[in-house]
Length: 59
Image (cartoon, rainbow, N blue to C red; front, side):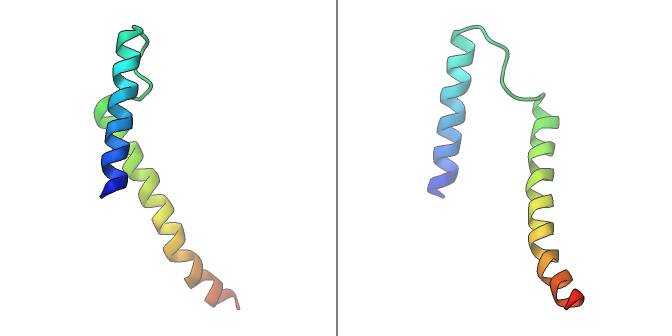
């Protein structure tokens, strides 16, 4: 839970800094960005789940 809070706080600080410097937000549009991050996470978890199964099959 601590990691989630630190990630949120870091994101807030970065967002504030970018807004104060009048720079474009360093992220894709809201919904697409969230879906993209979820997709990356699920892809990583899928490979870590399938990899041992494939290794057992190949042996």
